[in-house]
Amino acid sequence: MTDLQRLTPFLMFQTGLAQEAMDFYTELFDGEILMVDRYGDDTPDMVGQIRLAAFSVGGQQINIMDSTIKHEFDFTPSLSLYYRCSSESEFQRIWDGLIEDGTVLMPEADYGFGLFGWLNDRYGVSWQLSVETAESGETGRAESGETAPEVPEAEGSDIQDFGAPDISR
Image (cartoon, rainbow, N blue to C red; front, side, top):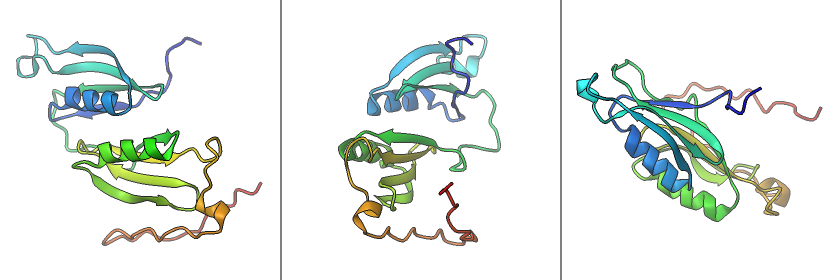
C-alpha cells in the first residue's frame, strides 16, 4: 500500500470559484494548499482557473477543480463533509464562517449527542459539524438528562420517522 489517500473528496465548481473556495476553506480550517494546476492557453475560456488542485483540512486531502463543462447538476446535501471540532469555540468559529451567505439545514444545537449543526455554505457545499465531547470532558444533553430540541421539518417534506437504530449490540 502506498502513502496516497485512497478515498478523496473532489469538489467540482462550474462557476469558476474553485480558487476562492479553496482559499476560504484553508483559511477557515487552518489548512494548506498542497498543489495547484491551472488551465493554460490550450483552454482559452479557462486560462488561469483551476484544472486540478489539492488542499488539506483537518488532515484530509480534498481535490477541487473548475469544470470546463456545464452540467445539469451541482452540489447536494445528500453528500456532506463532516468535521469534528475539538471545542465549542472552534465549532462556533467554523460555523460562523461557513454559514455566512449559506443555508442552515439543521440549526446548531445539542441533539442528544453533543453540539451539532448542518449547513450548506456560500458555495453550496454541505457541511456537518460536531464537537468531540468524550475527549474534551464536555457533557452533552443526553448525559445531563436534558432532551434534544425538535428538528424543524422541511416544508413539503415527506420524510418518515423510522425510529433510531438499535446500536446496543
